[in-house]
Image (cartoon, rainbow, N blue to C red; front, top):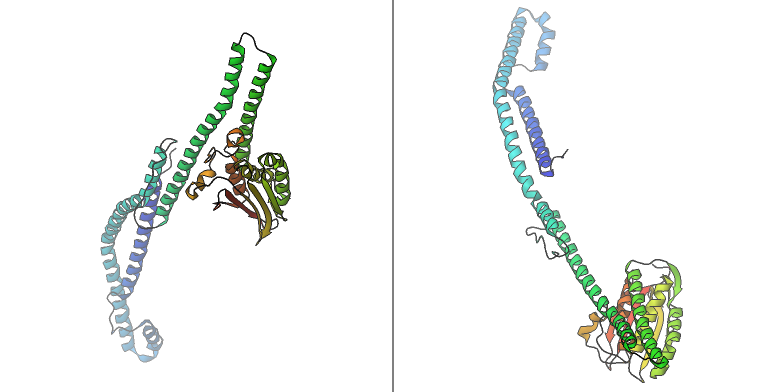
Length: 389
């Protein structure tokens, strides 16, 4: 069974309130009219009549006549009042009925106007789909609760549109980047199998190319999994020191830094935080790897950790190509590579800073990136200090 609409229920409520209020006002008017109609200012009051009745036996027959006359007048006045009120009761009932009908009609119109934004919201919601997220209510008028609801809905749809666009771009970029190593593997094997005679050296060279391509695909999938895990929120919350994560990340990157002749300096002071140790290791590791790979031979890398004002800080600076300030936001998008870098083409997945940003947000932190005046980048991450989360 279908329940009555909100508009009908509001109409009935408004009409009932109007009729009950009108009936109460009419009853009050009748009560006042009954007690004031046909009053004679020369008539004795009720207190005076009571006093006359007490004094009548001692005052003689004259007082009896006055009492009878007063009682007769009171009875006539009461009868006249009843006749007058009964005579107007029909007109009052008709007026109350007309008020009820008019109240229903006006309440129906008013409820419809009040609920118009909700109907627009419902219609827009029905039209919206994955391919029609550009739809908006765009409600105009004064700022009230319904306009606030419509504006909030428009903002939510805007965020959904941006999220779907980012998802489509992410999937397209991921498919493109994963296709490259798979194409290398397939073409290498097809070429090798097409040869009538293949030497062990040729098979070894093909195997090396296949291993390199599959390692790149593995890094890509590992990065995608890390990004998905960090996007879903912090899984574990444990005390952890970012200084330890930085020391481990620098140690892991030592060999690559030595091959490029990079000067790595560290100032690792305690930076206690609460979070997922695996994700935090990935955060600092990606910052250090990014600084080493997107650098030039003979450059430098600086890693600093510390704490202050209830915030733990890790900062990674590096030399490298100049980066336009307008392009900084693109660095945090998946699969965005602004410069080729020293080893970007061979080992970079384009997910490093995107994963870092996602992990930072999962830990309620902030991240900033600033181009250095002489080239390179400074990335600073701040997280709540352990005990102040």
